[in-house]
Image (cartoon, rainbow, N blue to C red):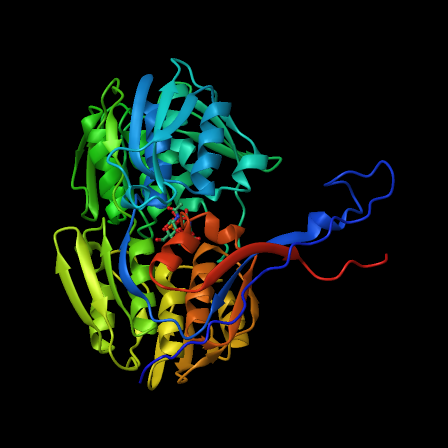
Length: 478
Ligand code: EPU
């Protein structure tokens, strides 16, 4: 079947400036403009074709920036994605007394070579001899990953006070494994007025730690604490994600003694000090996986560069089972789908299992596949919140606890929907490409947190797409 497309008008009308009473400026209470939201509109029936380059992984770069805190002096991290979360992390580090500078990247992002906007940068971080020890709620609430300064600051300063990040739209998100691991290493940890306060006045010592679950964040915090602790630390049931391997390889180049990275058991021998380094961020497997699913869902033909396809083995295998043709080479892969995808079951698991961050894409694929798929989410208790928005696009989804049964439909139906988190937002945009008519995804600031210039990439792959801002509902007379 071919997707013939009459491109509808996606123009987002400019809004007239609101009439304001005297003395009321933009952003003041009563100003309707404060209720504007950013939206992305896509025309359904697209077939993605072409090549897209993936830059460094958000979930690695954020932690590499935190790892820089472990050594006084200048560290440079390259291939850092140009996204909101990285800018917030830069601000977290500045408030800790670091000088942080973003520069054009090397090597140059192919998007720039084609005259587009840079999607990656390099970040230079000058870390003082005695960094600050506090991360406030105003930043932590915007970037949950700020909690990754806990380990490095405790190691360097023996004291740290970080706002408790709380839960978010994908689930409850505990910190118990971070806390119990650091406690075993000699830290005294308490909670007060919304802050996590950790103190180790005599320094941290090595410990044997067994994680209840291979938590990415807990593994990272514990590794960053252990590299400067006295003696040996063993972390069992450690996370094995490529981002963990990336941070370990940066730490090793800084002088840390770590063995077992990429396996479930990490051995770390503490050293008295580390030195700053220059390090390139590993490619973003979740962004790459998003393109892989988008190619399959739109019966397209997309080549993704800048990523080791081995990091997506399970996800790409699902696409093969769905009827796709997948070719891989050193740092690229190509996904082609010529017919309607066949339904496949998906179970999310810690790496090397199917990534929870690709769950919205798996649901999107299932929603347009031939047959019924059973999708099981094992990492976050709130991931299926996104399913309600997919149902607005006509997807046939029934959830029960951490399972969802999705009965595929030939075509979805374009509608206004709302992004609730980064990956849900991307999933809805991709879902909209398989819908009749126009889909308007609102609150796309969530998507900006993880996808550098998604609109430019979509356009380059042949999608009719517009971005703008609209009022978030009618102005009310209260
Ligand atoms: N958990 C606990 N206690 C802990 C730590 C984790 O109960 O002490 C639970 C969490 O509540 C969650 C599960 O364990 O239910 C997994 O949490 P994990 O610590 O592995 O995840 P994370 O470090 O908070 C990172 C990524 C997520 C990604 C997960 C899983 C970053 C900044 N975030 O989160 O990415 O989904 O690993 O792979 O690295 C995203 O990028 O959109 C995103 C959510």
